[in-house]
Image (cartoon, rainbow, N blue to C red; front, side, top):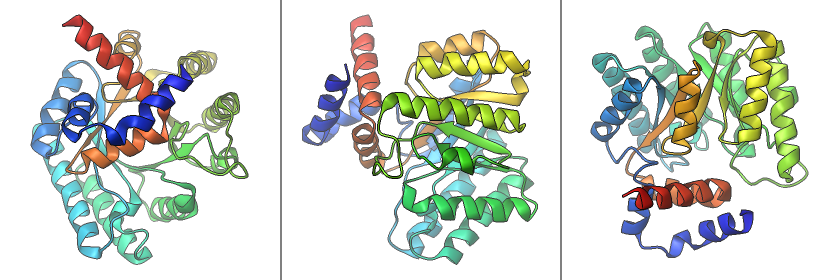
Amino acid sequence: MALLDRAIARVLPAVPKPVVRRLASSYIAGSTLEDAVPVVRRLNDEGKLATVDVLGEEITNAHAAHEIAQAYHRVLARIEGEKLNANISVKLTGFGLELDDALCRDNLAGVVEDARVRGNFVRIDMEDSSTTDATLRLYRELHAGGYTNIGVVLQARLRRTLADASGLENVRLCKGIYLEPEEIAYQDADEIRASFRATLRALLDQGSYVGIATHDEELIADALAQVRERGLSPDRYEFQMLLGVRASRGDELVRDGHRLRIYVPFGTHWYEYSVRRLQENPKIAGYVAVDTVRRLAGR
């Protein structure tokens, strides 16, 4: 199956853009905020939470970074106005991290303050390893400055992650989709799973709120066991999944009384996001292909 996943991911750039759009339609909310709002509302009606992401990262000028920040302000206003059960997830390269640290911090702080006033929450995404130190530093600076409505992301793939977990209060834990050199990242799937399990245990032991972000059944089962072991109530953790991926498993988690948050990306950069993410994580490409075939078969 792994070979098939990689084969699917490799051929994506050769697939016509309209075909990729059709295949990605269940995994991207659309190009505009108007597309994303009904998706979030439907998820809420199904008993699920959402985190909204404006696609766009690694921008090349300050104006583009400002525009992405403004897009998030519009998202926060819409979430409040529509009374949606959703928060937002931001990428620091989209706010100008690779251009100017002060620019990025100002854009981030403005969005976090807006979210605080509206009683909402901002998740700072983790990108490739070149941004890890800066991401954790900005998170800690804002948190120390009184902003408790923020969280960060840790990637189990990185060898440093267990050490980075110390002292973090609100974390999304995922495997990580960025392919990194062996000296800083685990390459073997079982090693990545072992790192995920150990980091989750450390986070729960120190009382962190954890967004357990995985579609891996082994890790879901382990997380459920860890939650039961500690007798945690559903408000002390949540599961997280990508829009359209393993939706039936997500439904099961909700029926069993667990909080589930769905990652809802939208924006004009949907094509770049789709191809890059599927190539970086062939397993997700396999999930997409299998789910697509099942939907077509169902029709």
